Image (cartoon, rainbow, N blue to C red; front, top):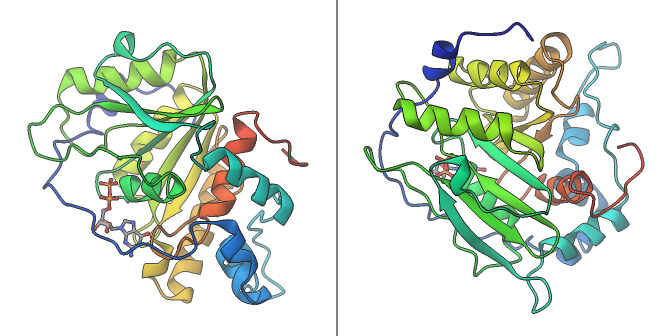
Length: 288
Ligand code: GDP
């Protein structure tokens, strides 16, 4: 997978998005971890550690390992990570700026994480869910065909910056591809790239190209599986096992543990917040 790919292969990754869609999903009641801790244990585990819940369904003789314990923070650590994502007068969380070129990007000393994925994969919804403890943050989306696609920067207090990258598809304008490539290759404070894959359909061709791009640039990246509430348990398990196999066999730079999430039920969101808090150096959980 780490074979260098010609730039034109990367260029097929992006497209003008299909249509403008407004997210109107009802908010979950599980924004804050204190609410989650009141749930019965089984329900809480399902919400906080969705991968563990899936692993329970594997037959004992299954030799496939879902690597559920590589990042396995305590509930206390997950609780601590909430502080990083909670807006207060001392922890201002806000949209900062947008850029179409790396030299227009804000020059901040704080660590950065970025989110990439196909249009419609659920990226805006996921970022909104991560920022649900800072409800005034507006996650901007530019989905109209022909509209300039931008990288959107969000400042999370003194802790880190989160970058929402434009959604990709086929036939992107050249300058747009250059923007994404240049950012991924040259952003010095980029700590981790979160690559979103729709768990309902699994890894698609455009996802593969994005994965190859991450591998080619030797980026440390993490696969986040979106919309896990949409499938039956059986279908989800099948997809997750397939993706896990792919990550184990075909990738070098991908973090071995998958992060299944739902922006509707908030499943996996608290764990992902905790992981981001760790990756950006704001929390120290054993095993990372
Ligand atoms: P983006 O283009 O990647 O930013 O995708 P959006 O966040 O706009 O989501 C695309 C569509 O998927 C919208 O109709 C969302 O309501 C829906 N969606 C996003 N995340 C989820 C999820 O976790 N569960 C379900 N059921 N639908 C989702």
